[in-house]
Amino acid sequence: MTSSKVWFITGASTGLGREAAEYALSKGDNVLAALRKPSMLEDLTARYPSSRLLTFPLDVTDTPSIAAAFNQAISHFNRVDVVLNNAGYYIVSEAEGMPHKAAREMFDVLLWGAENVMREAVRCFRDVNCPVGGRLLNVSSRTAIVPQPALECLTEGYISELDPEWHIKITLIEPGLFRTSIIQSHMTEPVHPAYASNASLPTRTYRALYPNIEDTHFDGDPAKFAEVVYKLSRLDEPPVRLPLHRVALESARQKGELLLETAEKWSSWSDDVYFSK
Image (tube, rainbow, N blue to C red; front, side, top):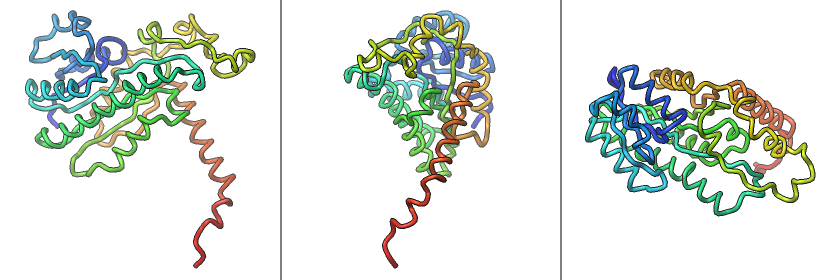
């Protein structure tokens, strides 16, 4: 990869995506910023010429538009070196209480939208870049470490299948509580009736933190997140997973300990499940 990189960033209008775009530009890299409303980056486009920063109107649920955005980046910059797969939002709800329509719409963004970006990124890294290669950074979340969501499993599938000769490196970034506008724009579903009477349940405890959760818990600095992501993009051998924030680290440790404990505790159940020789 060349010393000056070309970034493709989704969800670049605000928050982590915007900070990453600004930091990459400040370090001399070029950026295609993909976002629903390019007008939200007018201050950046006023500071940087189109030879450095290009915006593209993108809704990641519109699959043809994703391919068009990558083609635009390739046409304009000749290659794409780093993809920050960052578009997303969140809903506060019990899993049982999430309306199917809302869940499907969320999956369209967080899974299928992200997967289509992944697919185009791999195609670009392998079939367009010369020399081949690239960095794909999928932004998951601290809470995603617990239920092993589809995006994380899909990312692991990609990592296990890619030909090493393609020189493609993928990392799952699992940020904790970073203070961005996504906090104000989140959606909240009503408490499921079965959970209403017990205020000590996990989702009830979490709900009780609002509306002051930004001041009391979200202490991660998005600008510092951007610095870490930039450093990550330069590593020759990046980690498969990168939990960022003390809360993300604690969740990762708890999950790892639980998996090991379960494997050890129940290992004997696998002693006699095989065909007799």
